[in-house]
Length: 134
Image (cartoon, rainbow, N blue to C red; front, side, top):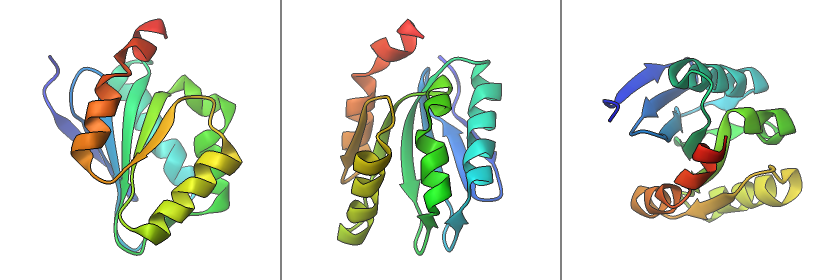
């Protein structure tokens, strides 16, 4: 089993939790750009040597993603890095934004929203078969 470790980027912390699960937390007071999303993907790809990850995403207070960042995060190319996404929604406003991402951008992979980390992790652990297919 991999030991848990984190990579600090300008906009987020990418924590490698176990064999396949990665938690990205976008820091407070940040407008996430497509470049921020790509830096996260690059960190995941480097650490996992090209193996896809099961991604849990959380965002800090006053943090949102630009439309361009959402489009980049859900582009077909993004599925090279990510097998499934679990988005932790903090409040109703955040849930509305996450809904737009899921419905409008339609990433070509399983994506679910959860009220807390425990539920998100439980669902991601059910998605291990997606990584093994990669």
